[in-house]
Image (cartoon, rainbow, N blue to C red; front, side):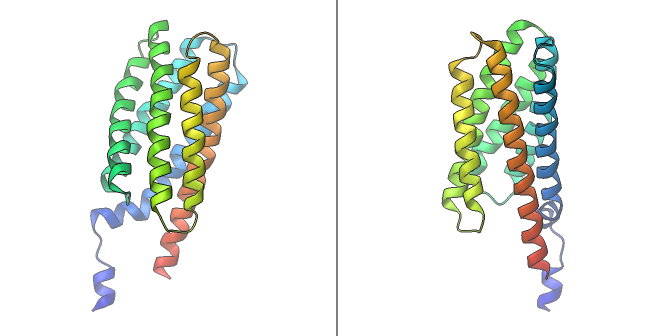
Length: 191
């Protein structure tokens, strides 16, 4: 009887089974966008705004889904849902292509990284699961990146683009690692 209860598919268990793929996909997207920005730092700022807009829309959807059905602490869940929803809105603004929307986007990236960093930090500190130190480390890096973005949103656009690209790559690697840890944990539960 216990085996049949464990084999029942619920929305949360179905998400957990495939959620690691979303995390890995989000991480890979961050890495790709970061590498593209690093490869073409002198290109049009509108291209950078468009790339970040695509990233924010996709990551916003994923953050909202993870916040709604993922296994997060209460404050971490709320921050992730709010951050994801606002990412969707600002990501959509980035498609306007104007210089002002790029400034708004830069400010939002800073705020979004701070909120997501706090979420990861709180979740990592509140967790007793193995590997939660990576969440704490990712949270710290996201917080630092967010404050750097807010401190220099426009004065030095090249620094902004470089810092954003580096943090996208670092954050992407952290998300891939998180997704692979989730996959490993799921496999251990099944075994």
